[in-house]
Image 1 (cartoon, each protein chain N blue to C red):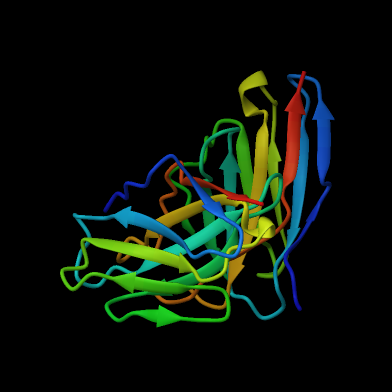
Image 2: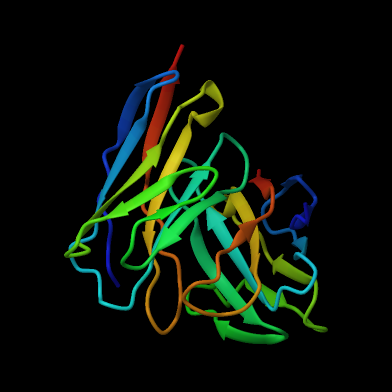
Length: 110
Length: 115
């Protein structure tokens, strides 16, 4: 199963873009990259996912490198409510399982 | 917006007692997942259903844990007997189908404390 590596924690100023990196160097060609976040004591919330192309929705943008070995989640204008643990997940092919790591704890500062 | 429902939200039980959690997925979602999340860690998949059938229960401690989804809609996760190490958040999630590009939607979780 492909594993992901994320920084343990990051800070971001309110109103600025938050760029959260993720390494997934063992990803296979047909495995998707998913991002979730978890605000304290709540269930994880889906943010975005992608395979090869960059993706954008109302919450965030996902940039995947051409070799697919890393990706970056971009929150364009971070707010205090974006403070959470962000998980980068490579969904295993065949079983379609999520393997969660320990994620990046993002703190948005006023 | 449709949500995954879970109950109870909090449960305190003594070790060796039985405990059960209930999950109602988003209407129309064929795939249902149960996860366990220990404090400070990411969620860990326990069992996965496609309709009423178990797809993957390789991480479910079957000597004490059981899960069912009899009619392919709501689901129950049971622990008997509970142990101190079972204290954790139990999360239920659902997705429209079982496949690569179907995202999972999580419920609020049940926080279990075993004393």
